[in-house]
Image (cartoon, rainbow, N blue to C red):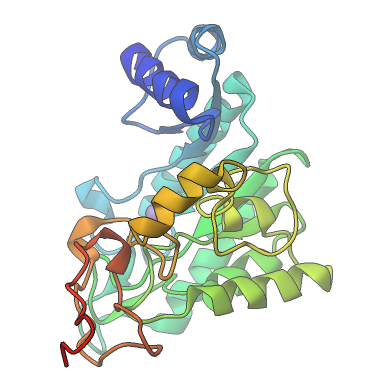
Length: 286
Ligand SMILES: [Mn+2]
C-alpha cells in the first residue's frame, strides 16, 4: 500500500491532477490507517474516496445489497459499515458504491423487489454517515449480468440517491455507457438537476473531465491542463487529442470504429482520440 501511494504521489507531482488516492476495501486494507494517511501526507497526497467491494465474494453471486436473503444483505451492509470506519480513520469524505448486481435471464429475479431492497440497504448505510460524508452511487451498464443490471444508468442511480438526502450523489464514470451514448447530454441533465437544488453532482460527475476543481462553468472542449501553454495546445491539436469523444475507461470496452457510422460529419467515431490518425485524401486524392 505504501508503494502504491508513493507511485500515485509521483503521478501527482508530475501532472498536478491527482491529489487524492482512493482506497478499495478489502484490497487496500491496512492495520493502521492513521499511519497510512500520514504516509500519504508526507508524499504530498491525501487519502480520498473509500470504495466498497461486493463483487468478489461467492456469497454475492445473486446480489449483495439487493439479495433476497437477509443474511447476505446484512453481510454486504456490514462491509459498508467497515468502509465507513475506514473513512472515519482516514478523514475521507466519500463512500463510493458500485454494484455488480443484476440477473441473466427474464424471470430469474423480481426486478421491483430488488430495487426496493437496494433502497432499504442504501438507507441503512447512509444512516451511518455523518453530514459531512457522502454516499456516492456509481452506475454501469451490463457488468457482469447481461439481462438486467440493478443500477445501470444515471436515472436509476439518481432515483436511489435522491431518496437519501443532500449528501448522497451520483457518480458518472465516462466508461460506463452503451456505445454512442452522448455523455455531454447526461452531464447537462445532471447539471440541471443540481441547479434546481435536487442533487449535488458536480465533484464526482466532472472529476474525469475537469480535473481542476477551482474552475467552474461548462466543461470546455479543450481540457484545463492544455489551456495556458499555446505550444502544448498546438501539439495537442496536431495529435487530434482535443476531446471529440470521451475515451472509454477500459480499453477492452472501446468498440473501435462505430458500426453505425460517424455521429457527426467529419467525426472519427468512438475511441478516435486513441487511434492512429487515418490518412486523409489530399488535394486531387478523391
Ligand atoms: Mn468505474
